[in-house]
Image (cartoon, rainbow over all chains, first blue to last red; front, top):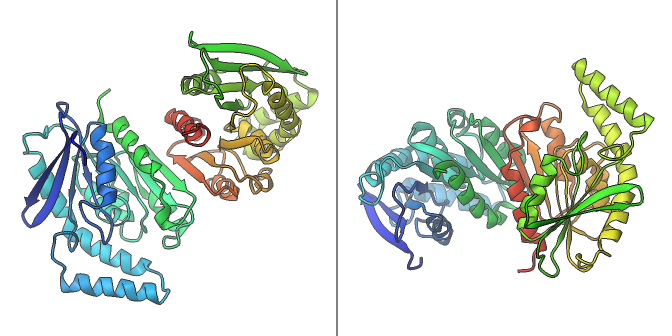
Length: 238
Length: 238
């Protein structure tokens, strides 16, 4: 993070988070809540990279550690599920059933955490409580974000992607805010039809699918630029 | 077209075209060949609008009238096919079979016309014959562009979209340059699976699908901005 970006660490209950802001934020600057991927944490390179782009474009960006991730303790259940995931990988079995089940469990814990975090952030002096709020999360952060955005009327636009629909379809059907959704056309974990089905499920009148050639990990960097433009289009007053 | 844009009309054989260039084009500026949609012409608003964005970004842009379109004479065959299309529309029958057949016929005429046009353009004093060339065409311009780009090694990147795969799949399988492909998720004419199948057929290692909610005519304006960024990414030296 460079000098034009202010970093503020915070905790909400047991949940550690970070808020990045422009050094001189315009009044009423929108806030993006950003979720990290599985096995990752709030200040991982994907988070700081995307936050850098967003803050440069005039947004506040907040990330919290997901349950069992980053600076938070792992439960025995976390350990079990992670061991089971590694076992399946080693055995060449599909990861989907384990990831879907574990992420759904994490989402149950994380949705109320995100709601409390947003309550807290909107009381911070640098955040205008009336400013629009977006959510940005791929992979595990989609598993958490889809039920969160479905439950949270304060979120006005969301970027999701790269997840199975199984535990998410019913939530997606209740989401009506603009959505941008990223998938990989040759994803070795998430079947193409599954990704398309999740995109299809969003009730949003404005939604865009970006499908790129390549495997799961090959999501192109330029999709982060696209996400910034999406939030500018929907959250920044003309 | 504004004062910063130079417009030059030209003809190649019987084919009328227009070249738009930056008032002061950088040396080696890339050239975009752009095709218009069915029933339209080289200076229709979609063409001047997209050309304005591209020229502002530093590109030359050339458009020619397709066979039977714009300033070109209609044949008896054109009249028959257009009458048949209107009849099908009136009767509420699917347009696909007629559009696919008629556009395939137009593509057979238009591919060699585009090749001669490119030969001619590369001899213009304002065009660097070594500069990269792209192709940008949706709808009928995809029906013409896919066989053209498959046959033309001078094209280094292409934006396509909104067409049936029937007459195009074999050509698409020979295209390896980067492709951006636009479809409408609720297209009332082109079945979703057909659009996805055409995107899937491109052999390009780098390809991106943009699917937006909405009907055939509701392709969002911001996809033109995306096309400009795509060409900048692939054709403009870093």
